[in-house]
Image 1 (tube, rainbow, N blue to C red):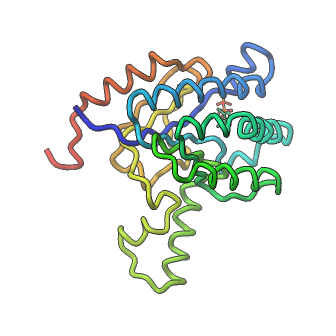
Image 2: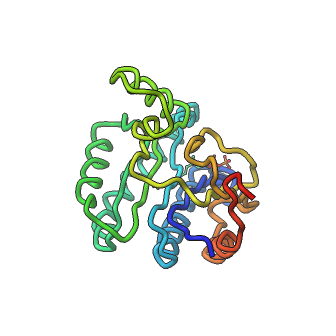
Amino acid sequence: MNPLDHVAIIMDGNGRWGLKHKNSRNAGHKEGLSTVEVVIKESIKCKVKFLTLFAFSTENWKRPKNEINYLFNLLENFLVRKIDQLHKQNIKLKIIGEKKFSKNLNSLLNLAEKKTAKNKKIQLNLALNYGSKLELVNAFKQLKKNNKKINEQNIEKYLYTKDIPNPDLLIRTGNTKRLSNFLLWQASYSEIIFVKKLWPDFNNNDYKNIIKKYQNTKRNYGAI
Ligand code: FPP
């Protein structure tokens, strides 16, 4: 059975779900947050050590202002309401991406990271204002600035994910088969599962079945 240390998820389909059920894309984001909680719980049960959720990409700034504001309000409320609970559950929160948000959100995120920094049960990485290409460009800039050799180990030292193992499993919901600038370096050998369901419809059983399937996959890493 394959060990499962790190699961990364592209939570796609909120907008379509919201339009279909409530005539509002934002309603889909709200509903998607419930799935986030389901997946965190199940990840802990399955002893996953790192869970990375793609919550906002560097490209998502192209969306209408009202949707962007709604998403960040949702995140702020989530942090205010849930941070103590996450802390009690021994969950470590880490932001990957460029933390360039409102003063209030930046300080909430810093506070949440600081408060949970020593927690050990699971590390929840929230990819926010995250883009894989930007991450790599920044890493190369740092290598150059610090006069470092360009090799795989050094590049990895300058990624947001420097202390995080590569994802074993990458899941994308929403019936779309692409990586959308998410963990392009880190997912080189991840098992990738595309799910037809929209993120708010994704449930515990879907997740458990994917994990079971993953555990029985033969991983070759280029060998035979
Ligand atoms: C992609 O679906 C989803 C997002 C850009 C946002 C994800 C946010 C959440 C699940 C809720 C907030 C999360 C946290 C952790 C507080 P889409 O809007 O691109 O869907 P579409 O393809 O149907 O348009």
